[in-house]
Length: 140
Image (cartoon, rainbow, N blue to C red; front, side, top):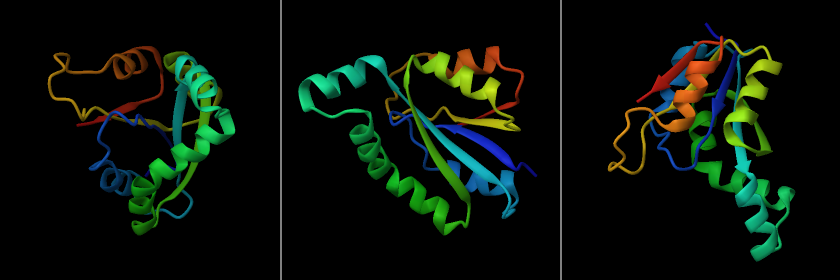
């Protein structure tokens, strides 16, 4: 079905049900690629440098390690993926990535780890769904 999927990954959301949905969206096509995209906010990056002495490359290595349980699920399902990290303002970087590349669909998780949040859609999910022309699939 889809061959070029963008998956904005937020470490604050639960992505437990996303791998199965990605397998359905790609129809297990070997040519399909999922781009796992994470934006490290400017504040987080500055804090990592100031308090931990970690620069962008070090932070991305840590994040790849944190992604391992998720990527292991993708590997088990035989899905092709790449990881991409940027630093900056989250919404702006996501919009830039979507607009500069030819993604067929953007898959976002809206299953929050914290249940006490009152809004149905998160801030980033709402802004992206509202501002892009690419189809956005929000997985609950």
